[in-house]
Image (cartoon, rainbow, N blue to C red; front, side):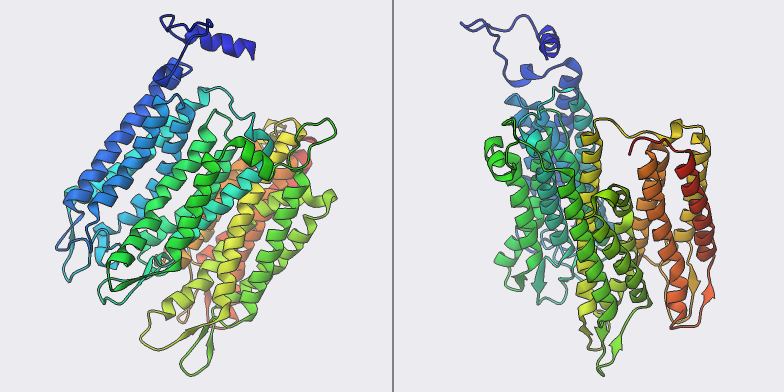
Length: 595
């Protein structure tokens, strides 16, 4: 610590005024610890200012031609565009560069998701539930300058966030206070982030206007669904990883940035419902507002308050302890058991009830049986200390299987709502949606538990790529990745009575489930050569399970319809063979130590 303080002192200008006590006074930009951090964070704030200007101009001139906003929305849009840059600048001038960088990073994550959703204007703006941007008319076309500035501004804010976060890595460690409660704080932040994401997926209001849709993002146009789904995953993950950041002030800043970025998702629909007689409030914005409020509270609450609320009893030495790794294992186990139970309930209840009272289901409901049983058994194993460390890496990817199958199941009631006949949604859709939500929470909890494993062992994970079979393991993971892409890219089954989900098929809810599962599996395979034996084998077992679900779709569809096996199924079988061989290789040649 003395060396660090000395280094900081050497980097500060000698011309600073000195107080009567002999200590140099540093405020504002002079408080930045180094030239690299100073330049990077100041540059990032400048980029955020340009991003705010671009979005403000877009709000004033409009993003479409042939239609106007349903209410006078541009003052609010300008305010929300300026908030991240304004807060970052204020924190920077107050000598809190880490918090400023975190605000830009958190807001940038939400901005990327928003840019994806708002790009739908270029395709078909009339399907968007955005009265702050337009009240749809018969003929609407995108305004090139307005839409371009809006999207460019959001993407530029994301660039500013990345730039600020990279520069903040050189800041001194400022985690001493909250380090004692970092684990429960991370879980709580992830929960509030998930609440924000779920609210964004639900309907923003109910509408009696025939042209202004009130559909939720789940059954909305493709890009609107993609942006909302990405936010539902990115918000809790960013919140959890943000809390783990040790650079001074960055953790609080990221939570505050997520709150600032999510605030428009709650305020704009609520204001529209308040001002417009044909709109009425819905639960979606309320959930977003609760998530935003929770994130803001965690970001701004004094550390001493959080210590009192979240810290467990002090240990025998009088120091404050942190929740033990077993607590996180127990939470993950409980979430897995609940997700498994929800999946089994979704498999055994009615999905859609037709006008004649006959139930209408989905072949994918059959796949909820192995998912439910598997998650339940893994969840119970997490309560057994002797095996929990082996099971945790498997759970870190098991959620991808829930999304893969859950999205296909949920596509049926969503499609039924668009039919001209009267149908009723059964309980299976709600149980499946609950399983998806619990699976995302499980992913966050497992991620935090993995970080805690490395910290409590006191050493980083051993790397299987450093062993004698490291090259073979890396090559096997690469080959498996190619086969996995083929399994998800191409249909595993073709039937005249059933539309299978694949990356080459129609873009709907099922498509996004396949895409997220693909990305998760490829990410796990990329981690295998960089992980220890236990983690690598666990990840491979989880990948085998997810790809196995993909192959099992052929049986699920074949139980009800005439089918032909698609090319994706053969890629899935090939991937499973390679993955099993790779798991055996890692188990035999991986390092004997490390997680």
